[in-house]
Length: 207
Length: 408
Image (cartoon, rainbow over all chains, first blue to last red; front, top):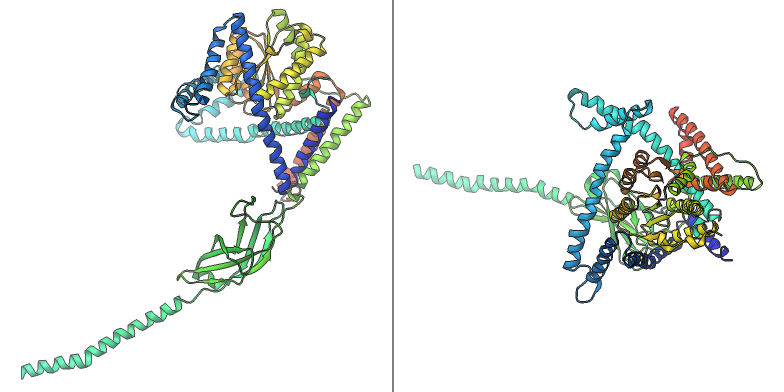
């Protein structure tokens, strides 16, 4: 019974989701939107679970004085400061000066810094990937070089290089991408079918 | 005498020439006034011919068509389309159409509170006004009643339906074959075969295993597939008594992952070793999450990292950090743009559908293997259809292409 009820709900709802794709009526669109809205509502409640998890894990680290416990203080301070500044009456709301400044001049630059690390990681990853250790790796290196230098002014060579680069991107590269996309589509459909039929039920925990 | 001549000439001028000149001016004005009268004539009247409901939709939309004489097209700026719910009611302007285009697609509102609301199965009347270049307009007779309605089935999606039915048939067939004990061969996947080795390595080194479910929601297929793999990995981890760290990006994902890991420990007969702190929420800000997970990697130095699920720009930052600490890395995602990053930075990568298939490989459950076989058959059929389609189009016949075309 513990399994049958959720599996029945999953089957009915997923069957509805499949059928509604073929039915353009208003009532079905409304029902579809209603179900999607429910995921948002559940998400809001689940956020409380997330905050509780964050609080508990970090509080325990501080209490036990685990290794690097000081970082947990910073995490909890960040959480509480943003909550206080954003919600406590008298401090205004999410539009207030302090909250906006903390968001735009602390959080956003920190996140941008993390993102900008990507440029260096791409360089280090490319260095490893482009080692010509085998025929296939050499082919990758050669293709990569052509793609990279197509934007470099090379005089009379620019046009043929650009044409070769376009061919690499639009023929072998696109063919491989499409093959993967078709595989992903079929795999997603098979997984959806397995979930619908109750064959794949790991998301419910084990029996 | 001389003065008399001058006076006589002046009288002659005033009496004969000036009136003629004045009359001549009046004569010159006549054609202008006549032309003005011609221009003020209204352009020809449009004739509303039909109002066609748009097929394969929820209604609320109608295409109004009209006829207009060819000789009138040059005389008008364009048409205005008006709609009313009764022939005697007030007509509201719905839109305009160029002079050489004789239909208008009227998109009504779906919501009743919308002033543009257009009800299904109700009568609507239209009139078309031709706007003359001279500023004079002519109205058509009122056309209608026309109705719009929603369709129960989208006929443009029939090829999709056929595909779904064929695929479902293969899946059910191979699952029932597997149930009957038929041996199904599936090719080995290096990334999946390395799971045991990776968990064993972590155990030998006495270091934890880091499992990252990505930044997808619980509704993403990649995340759902990752839950299944997490269950298998957690079971192995529990058997080997190694530490497991699962930092989560999404609270719902965290909640499900806790349940999956708890159940895996229970299945392995070690429920006492499980605690909720293994699976915890970090944040749902993308790069803050990356910073948090990278911090865990650098501090805890896991022996094995799993990146399985939905990933975006953070994939390489995570994988390169994992690479720098010397961890064995197994990755898998259905995000095509992230696959090259994982291929470069990780030891094993599950490409696209291999992520979905991983649970079947790990569990060797005949039911799950059956669905893998169905996928292979579907791919085979698709390849044949593609080949025939390419060949027929190359020879100038569009039949196959039209047969599989989806009209949304």
